[in-house]
Image (cartoon, rainbow, N blue to C red; front, side, top):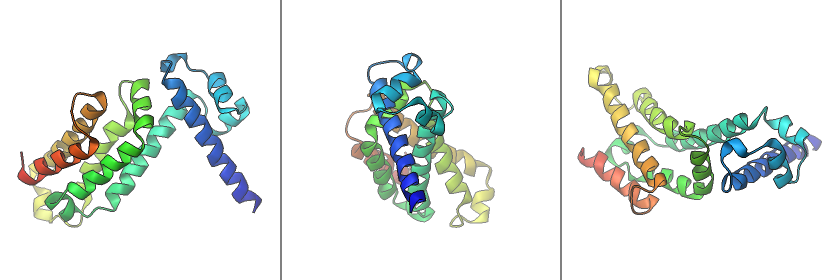
Length: 187
């Protein structure tokens, strides 16, 4: 039982650190945020921070990796024929995840010019398509197959990125519908 309580405490501490970091990112650039500022905002001590992260860059990397893992879990639940024939349910799941984590994603996007989760989404989708047992070997052997995987996956990532930057109008749900239509119609 003590191990479970210890594990819950570790999860709670990481969450408090991440929440404090996000809150600080709203008012300061990344290079002005310190470990001291984070732990003061979180109500923790420096030792707790360093028990989980070597530095602030590792905190950012860890937060981005959590997003990529969550997106991968969404993708892993989606069978390829359905993704290619009816992509809307998948993109609605992605959009819902992004909406639920919008504050975190915006904070991370403001912290650095290139984010692992934005770069990672197209890579995850393309690799998932390429590895799918639902796609025949002759289709997979075509020279253009991987190019098409990256093209569609990259387009999806770019459209979501544009939405977060404010250059695409509508809601995240609208983005899901647009992406679905583009993939279903091929344009």
